[in-house]
Length: 178
Image (cartoon, rainbow, N blue to C red; front, side, top):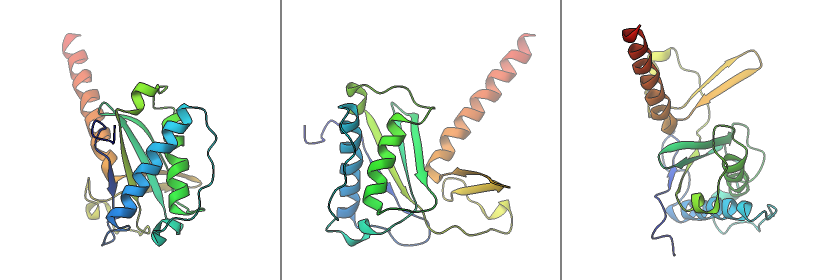
């Protein structure tokens, strides 16, 4: 269908200044992510591709692929320690987000056409003096304690804030009925 009936997709640049990839390279990443998911639905093995004509896609960068199905988080998996070229990472992480994230439902071929794909290319991590330096929906946040780490991407804040708001509303309703 040439993509006309597909949901919007986006490349979410790192917040360290400047776009991490050109618009053409970003479109290549989005096509690669969608193709990887579609091939996964067909049970095709993930195969290596030749290097991209866009040099920035051949560099190892930190990246996350977030999938939304009808406005709900379907999957979000990424890398905070780059080990492979960006293009290959996006292809692998798109498939992992689609099929291996336990927060999502099992996808059908009909679902694939409704997926919204966000690709977040992360800037290098840096410490901040305190929580006041963090802007919700602009900054991602990595929390760590010992060997455990958690990451909140800028585009996922709203999902968690909405969920938290719903939990508070349900809690208030339950308390008012008892």
